Image 1 (tube, rainbow, N blue to C red):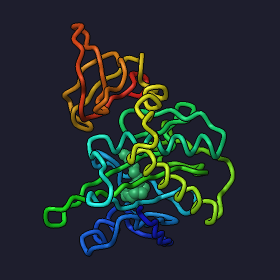
Image 2: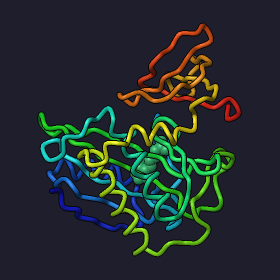
Image 3: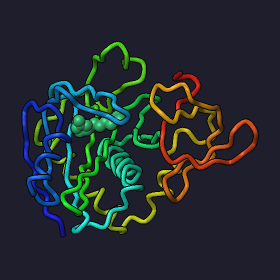
Image 4: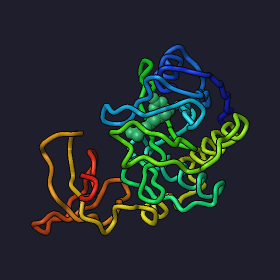
Amino acid sequence: MIKLDLHHFDTVTSTNDLLKEAAISGCPSGTMYVADSQTKGRGRMGRSFYSPTCTGLYMSFLLRQEDVKYDINLLTAQVAVAVSNVLDSKFGLTTGIKWVNDVYLDGLKVSGILCEGVFVGTEHSVVVGIGVNLNTSTWPEEIAHKAGSIYSESLSWDQRKVLAEDIFHKVLEIIQNSDSNWLETYNERSILTGKTVEIYKIADGDDHFSAKVLGIDENAHLIVENTAGQVLHISSGEALLKQNL
Ligand code: BTN
């Protein structure tokens, strides 16, 4: 049983960066950092994550492989299901998941997940970083068309704390297998399924192709059919909806 040990900060660079340092120094599984704001919040593919003061939940927690038998290849997708589930049940929402790590509401991204592996000697750990836009209302121009929030009112620290705890427990429930339906839930909530997307292997790269999304497989890979009719299982990269290009 992993014990949650939550530490609250006002402003940090990135909760993932701080927790990675703490992991190297030996902090236990279940250590969680939550910040009111981040000056260098990071997302996948080298992107930044906009983290203004107290209008979002910016949290990271540590899992050590010796304590929790997570599958690093599935973890990001499992965390996305956990976040989507918790947001829906707490706020009465119907969120969707955009492969692989984004939670969407009404066509806008409301949450992103960044899982980062840390090796200490031969032992593997992972820092699970989650950002949720709670009531952010103004955005930098470059993301204003695609970012949204889940709620119109601000949440107190106590409310954000409970949300962070609920997400942590839901993630553990999924990866320790008492919620074995996570893949089914992921597929039900996949906002890309049935849509035509552009698959990019590298962020902002030139190398991309059009494909229709068929679903998500048991490895959390995106199943697509390309224009030549071949079915491909995509393990990494990004799928952009045509209208978002
Ligand atoms: C993404 O959108 O690609 C992932 C965003 C992850 C953001 C969270 S906020 C808490 C933690 N600290 C970070 O620097 N990133 C994650």
